[in-house]
Image (tube, rainbow, N blue to C red):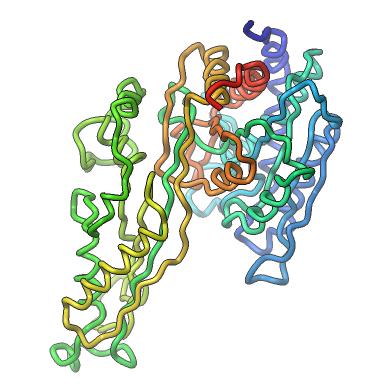
Length: 482
């Protein structure tokens, strides 16, 4: 039996303006986790969220996460965790949801058209403000779901566990250990049956999606040094082996102009493409014009949609990001840098194990440098890494969400992966041992992390309906493919 959601949907529509005002209140709190001076505002936002949920009868706790590593004068913002209803109903399933209440930095002087911490709604229903789509809109979506159920007199279908953090935009410091500890038997998150994260976006602007995969990221530095100090090219050019020349030659051996990774052994680590997986790409609502619009040019590598999406989602990529220590200002400066550090990363996919990737990278870079017969010194090292994640879109958590999408948007969702990383996804999956679903609210044009970040009114209000509908469908979906 499909859940009867009409009265719930109607209540969401009736409360739409108050939900927008709630988002307005949240956007007004500049909860920038990367700026020390804003730490009080991050905590204020966490307490605002806690208060909103407590006023609806949820059991909420603000759990301290300790001092910030490397900045011991700063306390990490608390993990805001909760349960609704406050007392567990043993007859219902338990769903764990995650989101974050911190935001990226933003200043009007960056090029914003409106004040970034004042929600501005234009005549097309676009709601501009930092954090509107990433991730305050989706986080408040769960608050709004609870309120709409109460005011519609509709029984809440599940036990909802909540985990909201305030450091996502600054590496989620302190969170992994906390989640792992709270998933142990008898702890706060121990009884989750499935998990849901709403912190990503539709592939386009017209069609909702469910996301079942993310690439990992291994980020490396190559440091080459020789002279004891920077040199004048007029005096020393032609007499000293130059670190910058060595670095350019080594980095040019990593990847070609068509994105093919030139490090031996990398491609052999990649899981082969199956016919079943290949078939998932055909019907996805995406065109090459979508890519060109995003790029601002027609410089795509592949001519077709399928290979382009695979290149973004299911194959690895290597990107060169920059050089530290080299002259980069406007104008001309005839300097020979004494030490330069090149930065590059590999986006990893199934079945690439990070230690195996590290081994191949170090071996290749070492060989490429030795082949130069340079008298300079080189070291290559890993800065950080996060593993890829992939779930089964056939799991009952996903099939329930797909039915919810159809009930709200009247279309089957695309099943997508993403080229970026959301490290907490893997942490939650491994700590709970349960399926994790990524259920986005916003669209591809929301400009998260950029100037003029926005969330469309329609995506916000229909997204609240979707989050609620998902809870109803996941409450009764047969637990097959678990």
